[in-house]
Structures are given as C-alpha cells and as structure tokens.
Length: 265
Image (spheres, rainbow, N blue to C red):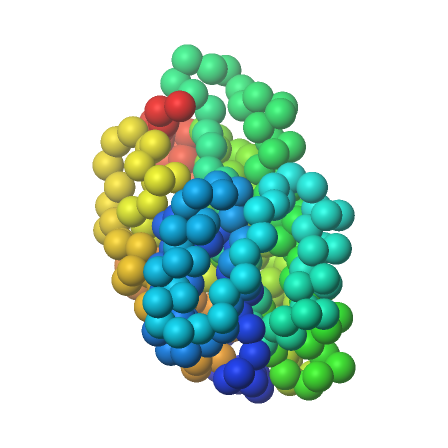
C-alpha cells in the first residue's frame, strides 16, 4: 500500500479514539483537542480515561467517553453505531491493542492469549472499521485509522499471536483502503516499531529505535492529514522490510528462530 490517497473529512465532526486511556491513544486525544476537534474517547480504565478527558476538555472541546472491553466485538460495533448516531464521526482511530508473547519458560503461547489478541488486535477493530465505513460512505467523507505493527512483516515464533493478529489487520486495512478510496473515505494503516507505552515497557531487553508516544501521535495525525495509506516508523523499518523481501526463506527462518524475547507480567 503505497502512494497518497486523500479523503474528505469534516473539520467539525467528532474524532473517535479507542485505547484513549493511555499511550498513543491519550496523546492523540490531546493533539486533536488542541486542534479544536470534538472527541469520543474509549478505554477500559475508568479513572485514567476520565483524566485524559479532563485534560482534553481544557482545550474547550466537547468530549464524550465510553468504557468498553474490545473482547466483546458485537458490543463494540453496536457502541460505535450508537456514538455515531449522537456524535457523527469524521475520523475513527482504532488505537486500542494488546501485546503479548510466549514467556521464556513456556513451550507455546497460551490458547486463551491467542484468542484474546486475535479479538482485540484484529477481529474487533476490523469489524469496527467496517461499521465506521457504513456510516462514512453515505456521507462521502471520513477517515479510518488502523494500528498495526512492524511485527506484521515477520513470522515471530515467540509472538505468533501478536505478529499474526497484526498481519491480519494489515491485510484488512489494505483491502478496505482500496475499496473505500473511490468513495471519499480514507484508510490509514499505521505500522510502528517500539513506542514507549505501558505495553512496550513489559518487554524485557533491547527496544531499538524507541519512539515516544507524543512523537508517534504527531506522525499519525500528519499521516491522516496527508491521506497516507500506510505509515511505517521509524523509517529504518521500511528499509528492513525491503531487505526482508530479499532474504531467502531458509535463512530468514534461521534468523527469526534464533531471536530470544521475554516480557514481564
């Protein structure tokens, strides 16, 4: 997914941000509030979500919040439609996600973790993106943002559920972008490397090219402004992705199998 395909957005329409109680989601909330955009913020932590909302309201914008667990995809789709009925959405940033991997002492990932990541990282945001598109297409404008990961570019044996779920959202975003571009609705896939968030802080070991959450939020907002279909950052991961396509599979498999990773609970 390359090139630039713009979308038409209503500057007075609401911006929906999931995962808004911390990390990139919170930073995006404050960034768009500073721009004067009204917000619909979703999160799982009541207290932290309200803290984010209070700071956003200080910019003088209307802010509505919703506490919801994205493990329930049907409830999330119904909630998005309900919020759009009362606060028509111009931008839907589906930033909520989970990170997990096989622990050092485990032989395989837990089945429950695989299901959890599949729902939160792929199935629910994909369904929500479809629901957002249902509302935006008749209006002839809008923009949907899906958060993937550079992990989607590689088969990670220690994080099969995470890399697999992010690969799924990548492919969905590419297909949805092609379908919606002629209809005035943009789709941006964001594939970040390590970002300094509560999720990444659980990872044990080196985190090369670590980005701050405010810097990540600024990059994402600029990508939406420019109608970029795919944002990969830091740039070095775009280079590594190209190199990856040139490496023969037997060698790639050997390299990936040798990587050691772990995380705290």
